[in-house]
Image 1 (spheres, protein in one colour):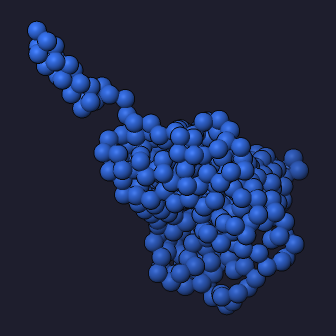
Image 2 (cartoon, rainbow, N blue to C red; image 1 turned 30 degrees about the vertical axis):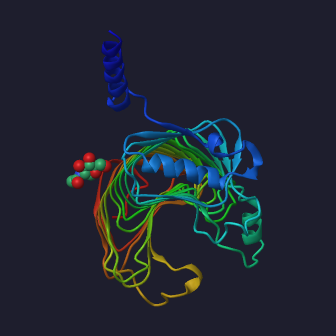
Image 3 (cartoon, rainbow, N blue to C red; image 1 turned 45 degrees about the horizontal axis):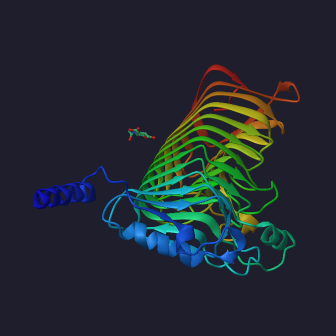
Length: 391
Ligand SMILES: *[C@@H]1O[C@H](CO)[C@@H](O)[C@H](O)[C@H]1NC(C)=O
């Protein structure tokens, strides 16, 4: 009898130890020594929690409870032993306020070579204000750290994350495939330099949904080598708009293709829907781009293609852009322009923009139809298009 009970216990134990019924391991950063006091350096504790989750042969969770956790730059390195790591953040991660600490580190929170990471909620406080002041004063300052960077990664989901006051870019995806962002909030001052909200490059199948971005540079910037990008339901402003580019800085460059930007609102931004490339030789391109259902509220350049980008006239005088722009559609774009020219296609004289389509576009300036300006742009207009196209 006793022996029989013993056998059953062994049997039950082994079932609960190995079956999928067992809860995945959860690693609370506090149990590794993190302190929610906003001052104690919790970097090592986060790295230990990551080492455990990443080394787990099955799905694992990292838990960050409420409170403020001070972190220096942290690299969450893969590859991991499982591809189901969830990071649940109920608290705030706080960067050093002295920008010298991580200002040259590239990234504050950096995920590299990871596959299957989900981030749920949480606040990132990049404490960037002192660095912006340094940059705005014209002094020589560190370039600043991206608050959260992903490099060479697959299958990433970010739900409900808030990024405040990043030193430089807020969130960057470089060399990533299959990324889904939902309900992300980005907040920084309208005069914070280089604080792009979400930057995507060399990445495919990225989806950005239901996001509010107020920042000092592009709300979303789309770099070379981006394909199959879907952006839907984004509120942008202040900021520099949603921008494909800058493209064509390098002679050899991967192109951008199949980008959809749908149901977006721009409020008081420098640009709305922008494509820009350097005025210099390149084999880059941007094609199959759909901008659909956009509302402009007092936007300086609601629709713009600028192929003569050359900041400070360094590195391109007298040259023309090699970037080929084709099959770009603007559909159902309405609202107000803060300048007279609401539609501006300034394309490459060597490779004119081709198959630009305007459909149901109505933009006004001071309650009058705004103006359009075209150079080296071919295409067509259909439906009500105001300002009357110059294609
Ligand atoms: C374009 O990208 C979307 C995702 O944004 C994808 O569903 C679609 O299949 C892509 N189209 C092509 C032709 O690759």
